[in-house]
Image 1 (cartoon, one colour):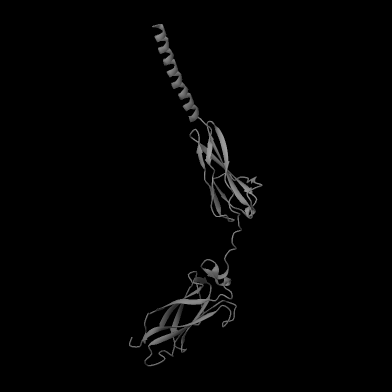
Image 2 (cartoon, rainbow, N blue to C red):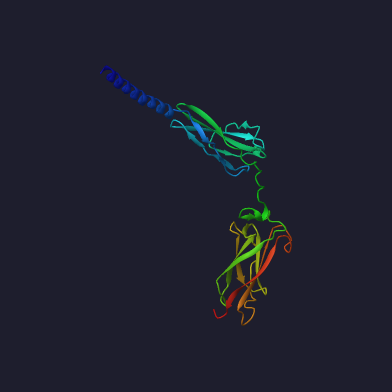
Length: 264
């Protein structure tokens, strides 16, 4: 009887030991410093002036886990790294000093049980920023001062008011858009004259605005109409750069025509 009782007590004690032992192991596993499973990765364009971003990487350990960031400048092979002062955000904007080097990010994961740091693989070698666009390759509007050969001005759009010119018309408003490589040119000088001459004319050149358009008021002269059955008013338009030969440089010329109805 006593032997049976002792055996039963021993069994209970072993069972309790097994339960509490497993609980201690589980509690130990749940409380752990951060452990890196995959390193942080750097993304972004490797070019001066562009911004790189680091991921956190993948971590295990007691939660919550917080992250701190730093950046390192390395040689073109990813070695000989040094800390970049003040770079403690998740992003880093590349500077001129970075050109020719590679960049690594470092992420430090921290929780109640400790901290661990992981480093990314190096970025591609950082290249210089491209030279700013010049001349007609720049952003619109293109200042006329920036237009030079071999680029040329182009009169690409026109409009007239009234849309049909009649015998009683005394004034015509014409508009021309001056462009270079399709972009509006600001500050070009535009001369407009009807041909044959002495029909409608303007005494002065007009200047294109930021939208590339120049507006010219043409006043009727004694030569209109040029013929009894005239059906078109032909307009000569010239756009030029101030200070250049009116027939040379970047200047351009164009003939356009607008409808005429002498019954009006």
